[in-house]
Amino acid sequence: MPFDARSHVRIARPSRDLAAAERFWAGGLGMSVVCRIEAGPQQGEHDLLMLGLPEAGWHLELVHEAGRPVRPRPTEEDLLVLYLDEPVPDELVTRLERHGGRRVPSPNPYWNEWGVTIEDLDGYRLVLCRRGWSNA
Image (cartoon, rainbow, N blue to C red; front, side, top):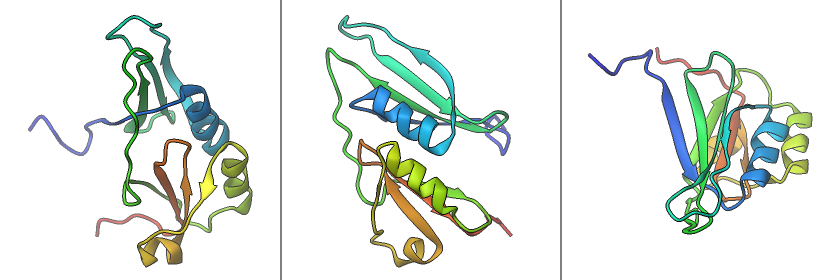
């Protein structure tokens, strides 16, 4: 089958400000810049920022087209959940806030009980969950 557990996953989103997004995701969370393309102001070309972790099976792609910007429209349920399998470090939450994030309550009480929800500058939510992930 062409799609299986080893398939790489790309999460793609528009962003209003790629520099601010890089501060949050790289400087705040600690992701690495995988690729950065600055296409310029030509119609139909977009700037691209891809972030990830070494050897991870996924990455985050953020795009911005100056000539035709797409305004992000996340809801409070558009979540990227990271299962830490340990308590959420206060210094990580503080660093994410210093890099442009905003701690917000979740409408889902599960995430308030088991994690911390941080909203990035585009309104997308990152949940740092103290539980571990198990598909068993």
